[in-house]
Length: 124
Image (cartoon, rainbow, N blue to C red; front, top):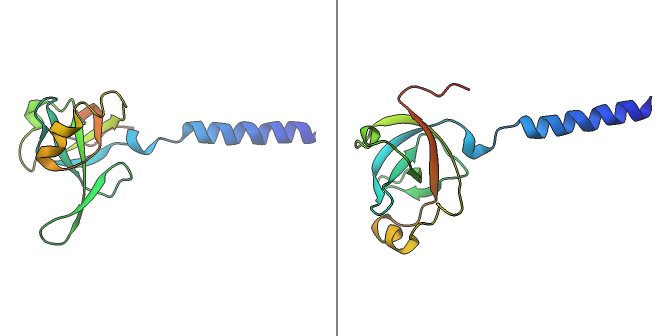
């Protein structure tokens, strides 16, 4: 009986760990800031809420803002201050296409690959 309870407990722990979403796969609200890296077409986005994937900066008003660069953002969303929702993931090969060229324009932010972009909140 103890063995069954132990196995059930282990199964529940494993199921819980694998069912949790990773931070970088969540749907997040963003605002388009500008182009980030001309070579890749990455977009510089400001996140509406703090996020462990983002790079934090203090803006000219003293507010902390969180930014990421995102590949695969359609041109229709690349409008200054446009608010939309994205899901994304990190790809080590695509995340550093040409660090020197990109950083020279805007500073160092993490580059992610966009999985989906939507004007309405993402569906889980």
